[in-house]
Image (cartoon, rainbow, N blue to C red; front, side, top):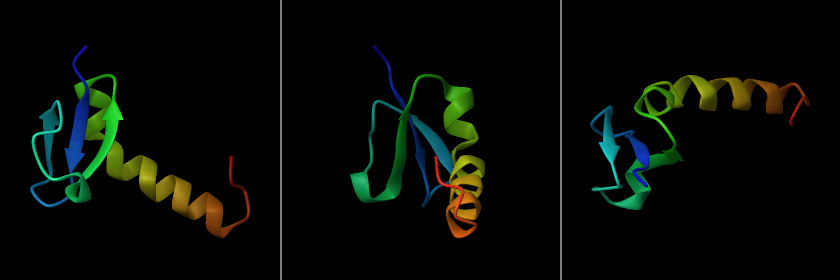
Length: 54
């Protein structure tokens, strides 16, 4: 099963975690989910700051 990761250094999606784990967010099931990784992180951070954590 292929997993997709978002690389915060290169701002690219990787298949099967090719880079160092400290540069990656994931895994995600699809390339599209990985492409939106930073949006998810931002939304979660904002919710956490407001005390609305999942």
